[in-house]
Amino acid sequence: MGILRQIGSKTITAWLIVAGGSVTVLADPPASTAEPTKTLNQGSFLSTLKQAIGKGSDNDVVRGHFELGTAPNLHRYYCLVDSKTGKREPNGVLGDLVPLANGMSGLKNEAVSFYSCANAEQQGLLVTEGYVLVGPAAAPAAPSVPTSAAPAAAEAAKPVAVEPNRLTLSPTQIDIAGVKLGMTPDEVRAILKAKKLLEYTESAETLSYLDATTGVMHAMPDGRFVNVIAAWTPPPPGSASDAFAVSGESYEVMFTPVPGRERAMGIVHSVGSTPANAIHELALENGLLKKYGGYGESAELPEAPTWRVQGSGNVVTGDPCNRRGTFGGLGSLTAAGGSRGNIALKKTTEELNYQIAHCGVAIITEDHFTANGGALSADRLVTRFTVTAYSPAFALEGAETAARLIHTAGGGAKQSDASHAKDPAAPSL
Image 1 (cartoon, rainbow, N blue to C red):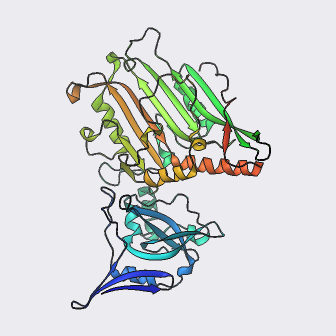
Image 2: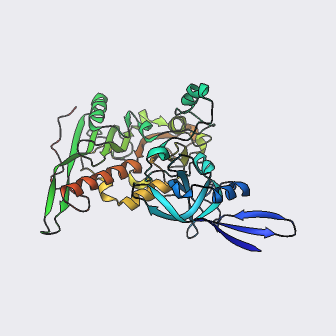
Image 3: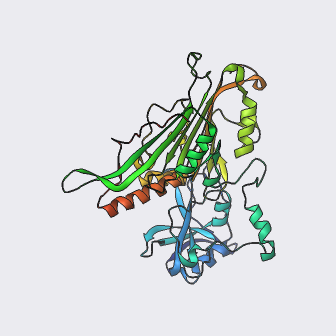
């Protein structure tokens, strides 16, 4: 018979098979299979039962979540940590989020599942962005190696292959031809100047807000920030009419809307070559594999590959969140046509949180054009390629900071005044 047991604030569901004398605890399993290649093994009944009846549950706060199933039967499981001891609960928990006075999040209506938080984190499913932890709850997990082995563990934590064709990265380690996510405008300026590209421009925007009383827009004092820095060498005059068979190079870097503390959150790098100077498609793909991993051989690369960096640092492939188009695509070799609107100001925090949960903390994309697509793979020549990097985690950080600055200045929702956004183009580098 089925039994629903309430233990403190925790609920577990048990099915008793009297004839066999065995007991199994059922999670609230997804109605369909988990996300393709994203499955989790179930743990033991004793582990689940122990967590359900464990003491000190009132101190548990949320440190992250993972999701299994497919819409409309998608279930979110929360991973908990004791706010007083820092001890992490082993299994994911179903429940309803409750904001706490200290900024952390608790749960109500809890039901312990069989799914392991450690397994979810190992597979890159655990999302920790957006959850505030303070005190003992913020401490890192206890090391699984002796203290004497700490140097070796620290070395292992560096971005190296953890298995064939799989890398670990953090957003600030993502390097697109010398420009990294998280860089300041000064750092980007120095790198692009060293590239010796012929053209250079910067655009800026100003945080502003609508006065609810007068209906008038007000620029926030000291609210001006660097929005985009671009540098490029355009195709020479009289180039071939084929837009994807001309030489040139361009960079476009977008920053978070935080005046004086901007960080690069989007990078677009495009390179064009004439057929005589084109690179072989295999050389391009092998270079991408060496840098980002994720595929067994270059032949396995899709036409437009995507890599997604998870909060755990694991790099996974594909674009199930359908967000590669944020910065992806074959970019122009001239950036003089006007700057993009700031992503962090155009997207809601809900949308950015969705991107983090379903895509990752950073997304890398590559697109290229093959001049002789019908040739054998070893003979195909690439005359245009674009590599992009975008961090929704940095965008969310910028959006939330901008909103706080505007609120402090007396405004409501975040806005930007782009009417005077374009600064005069700087002299050619």
